[in-house]
Image 1: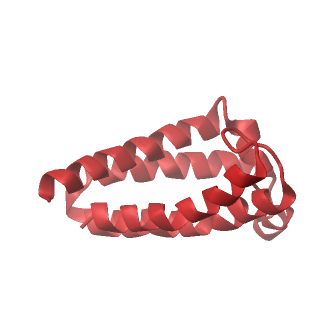
Image 2: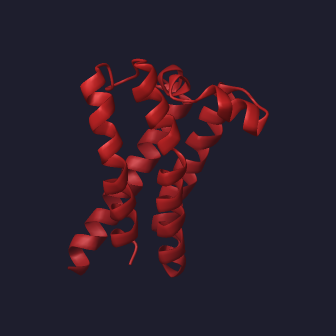
Length: 128
């Protein structure tokens, strides 16, 4: 079980870092589509800033999961909280029917909503 959790942790860190890099580079425009207008008003900033900051946070969380084994549980819970925090963007994208990378149909956008609880569980389980 320990080996499986270690592999799951490394994969999760890779997914986070990869997604974070995507937020900062080639997938940036697509991620802006998922940011609801209310989020820009609430945070008093623009969609691009939200995408960039969330990308940096993903990279930092992925790196922290591997670099700080003594804080692994707290980092895992922070990752789970992050996945919960971005769920409104996923719902917004599904409701508005806006295409983004890998989410170019209503079905894919809808199925993506059910991936979020899996990601939360993955973060909690892999960081034990």
